[in-house]
Structures are given as structure tokens and as C-alpha cells.
Image (cartoon, rainbow, N blue to C red; front, side, top):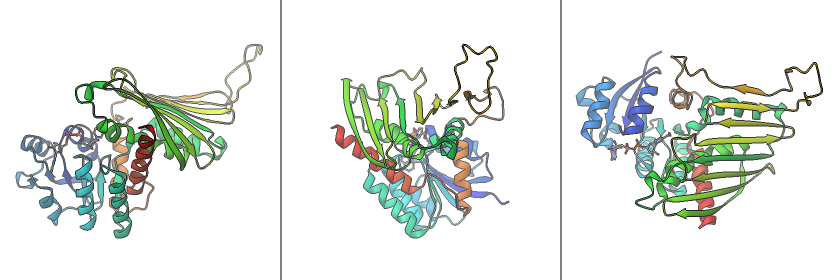
Length: 333
Ligand SMILES: NC(=O)c1ccc[n+]([C@@H]2O[C@H](COP(=O)([O-])OP(=O)(O)OC[C@H]3O[C@@H](n4cnc5c(N)ncnc54)[C@H](O)[C@@H]3O)[C@@H](O)[C@H]2O)c1
């Protein structure tokens, strides 16, 4: 198989430390890089063997090249929208970090352009791809689990970024948006969403988001900026009838079913099919470092860019997440 030739835009923290290192584990060649900051561009260029003349300061020059098969980017919401539209117009499959755009309206433009031109777009919703979340989602989607009645979850962060300049836009766009994709991914389409807001003090915001799903199920998501990032930040649970699945800290899955009481049973044991199943990764296994999901997400990007028709977090999912986020925030303000 020939390597997919990638043009990558944005060599900041996330791209340099997470995305590019995981991307190059696939059958790809980073052919050209772009960043307006020369030092970051050169660092990424040296790391990935990109020739100095292929390290560019202008993304338009990168998109104009005729030696790339696909584009990836992690720059920020406004540029994701602008560059994403330009890449689609060029017919180049594109990986766009979240959020795909600064507003739901602009995210819908991307989705419409992707659909009209038939150009694959993969949005960086890697929560779907974390190993634990994938296991749990597969349990939920197995008919044996039955109807999903409720979602309950927390996705927290710290006030670090908000205490000095109390503008929660970054919290909403860069943080909360993940769960406005993950929740419908786990529970199905959302019929309505609203939120209650409590600001403990400037920079410390708490939102309780209330979901009603088209299936009739209900959900509550707690997001906030008042917990320490030195502690685990994520936990969620989906309940069905006499069964529930929980994922703690994106690495531990518990599947509770309907076992009998053990206390008065001298023959009590652990029985297949009824007792609780628990999964955790072996974190000491060296070649197995992708439990947050970036590698698996980028694997699907490479497959989609090669023309495979697979289910991915596409531009339409990006637009849905942005729309749900905006609806929740509008109701809270
Ligand atoms: N999925 C995740 O877990 C996750 C984690 C962190 C960040 N992100 C997302 O990744 C994106 C980038 O975040 P970051 O933390 O790496 O930010 P960053 O500021 O470190 O990186 C952005 C990079 O884009 C470059 N840039 C800005 N304007 C440019 C332009 N016109 N042309 C070319 N390059 C330009 C900057 O110089 C910088 O190097 C954001 O959308 C963020 O939400 C996702």
C-alpha cells in the first residue's frame, strides 16, 4: 500500500504532542507542514522529516500543492471552518480538530459543503474512540442491552484558563463540545436539550445539562470549571433495564447486570452472563499507548481519506454537536 501523503496545518501543542505522533504510526507520509510560528514549524518538520522547502507559513500555499492526498489541521475554530471549506473545495479529504467551526451555523456550512462535494471530513471527536468508551458503546448497542433509559455523566476541568479573563467561550468550544458529540453517539438522537447554570465565583462555572432523547430516554451531563486537573475528570453511566454500563476516567469499564444476592448462598460464585464484567487496560504494555483514542480516530481518517465508506465523526456530527451546545447555552443564559 502506498503512503497517504498528508499536508498538515497547525503545529501547536496538540498537533505536535498528540496528533502527528499518532498519525505517523499509520501508512502516511507528512509531505508538507504549515504554521505561522517558525519555531514550531521547524520543530515538527525536523521530527517528521519534512524538507525545509515543504515547511510553509501560509496554508493557502499548502492547499495549492499537487503532491498531497489529504489535509489535517489543529489550529482553532475560525480557521478550521475557513481552511476546511477551502480543502473541500479543492477536493481534499480533511481531518479537522474539534471544534469544527466557531458557531453551529458555520459548522453546518462545512457539513453542507462536504456532502455536496462528496469530500470526507473527519472531526476530532476522539472520545468515541477511547478504548473504554468503544467497549462500552459496543455493549450498549448490542440488542441484549435493550433500550437505553438514561445517561448520567461528568466532564470537568479546572479554572486555570478562566480565572483571569472570565470568558467561557474556550470552555464551551474546546471542552464541552466533546460531550455534545459523545452523548448522542451513546444514546441516539437528541429531541431537546437545556441547561442550568451556576457560577460559584468568576472563572468557576457549573452547568447541568438536561437531555431528552428521541427514544424517550433522559440524560444529565455535568460540566464545570471548578475541579482540579490533577484528578480524573470524566465519568459516565448509561442505564438500561436491570443493567448499566459505566466508564471511569476513560479507562475502566464496568458492566453491571442482574446477579442474585450471594450472601445466603454457600455455593456463591461468579457466573458468566449475570455477574459484573470489568475491563481495564494493562498500562505497562509498551506498544499499546492509545487509550484516549487519537490513534484509532486517525486510523479511521486515513481509511476515509482512501475512500472507504465507514462511520466516522463527520462534518454533520460536528454540526450536530455545535447546535446542541448552542441550544444548551442559550437556555442557560
Ligand atoms: N481533542 C483533544 O483532545 C484536543 C486537545 C487539545 C486541543 N485540541 C484542539 O486543537 C486545536 C489547537 O489547539 P492547541 O492547544 O494545539 O493550540 P495551539 O495554540 O498550541 O496551536 C495552534 C497552532 O496553530 C498555529 N496557527 C495559528 N494561526 C495559523 C494560521 N493562520 N496558519 C497556520 N498556523 C496557524 C499557531 O501558531 C499554533 O502553533 C484547538 O481547536 C483545540 O480545541 C483538541
